[in-house]
Length: 123
Image (cartoon, rainbow, N blue to C red; front, side, top):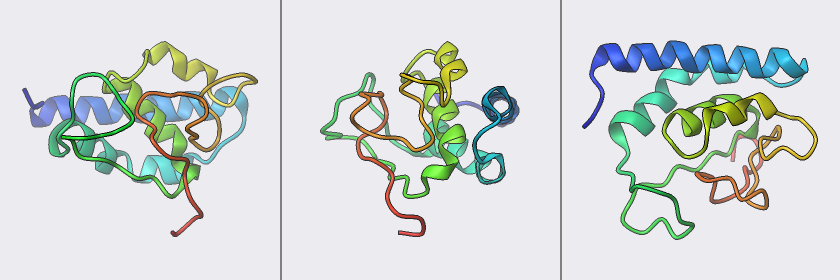
């Protein structure tokens, strides 16, 4: 069941909190771009995209999202976690050594929700 407007607004506020906490905790990252597109990604993942339960790399039978601007990884990670791809608690590992949540999403970290590494900016 798709969330109502109030639930979407509540999630947007929580994702923004996640972004600020992640970037502030490591004093590293780009919060501006992430904060600026929070509504867009929340709407996509919660209300617009057709997604399957679980995650597999083939993406058959579901909508796919391609992130070319890796600098907005904080919002991407938060929305993925809050959409059930991985535990929200993992957001605390943003940009730490050996974390799957680095400054740019990559596939070699086997992070559910990420099928391809982010491309060149503006691609």
